[in-house]
Image (cartoon, rainbow, N blue to C red; front, side, top):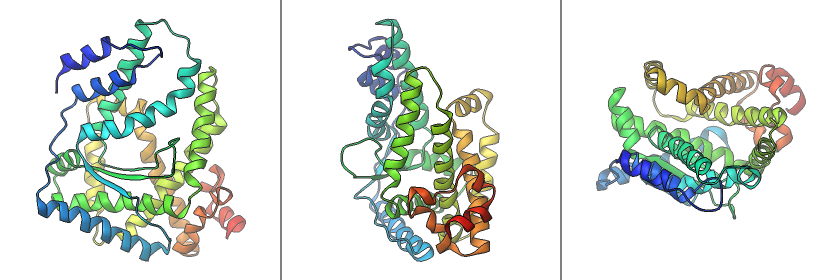
Length: 315
């Protein structure tokens, strides 16, 4: 990790656009230690086993028909930056195409801001189901950031093998959602594109942002529901330890997480899980899986707080 090289990459930002994405990647990686990803044979086999068993168990619990993505990678932090930089660039495209900026100075500021975001996320992401939004083709990917999983397991503390397996099950639950709902990626892309294009025009599209939040609440809540039923041991202690760790962060890190919307993700977990628990209590988990039939079967924002209305409309 070299702060000097990171600053050097940002201040050397060039090109014709408001963000130099090559410099973003260079600066983010220069500011972040990659961590170790040299897996011994037994750990590599453990990841393979965890993913396979999570797939089989989630299929059994949900009755959803899905396959794992072809790309399943154990990464270090620099790998994660490289895997995500293109997605960030695609999503920011509408803003870049309409942005008015002062060449040089604004490019440095924009480049530095994006490098900071990617560097921060690369140090905190544990696992990721990546639908590769706005990419050509329909290939998805599944990532596990080994140095972060190891660090957090040590900090909790929790047995590394058990914590890793828990993360694997959660990300495979997301793979089940996107695998069972081929339309879901296009749906998310549409809402994100609409919101970003309005932002580029200087307005805030609250409708698109609201629908996006509702969809992500369903995505995160269903994954939590599946985790409760698919993971092969109790994990309340892991969740409690993670929550305590979040509360113990310093004020600067809490501010950054709030600005990046990471606190919202926790609210999505809780609200979405409450919705699906109510649906399962009233019917069963197969009925809960009806949300992935079509965009029209997703719960509305109002239905997230009134599951009985969703059941009347859909089931």
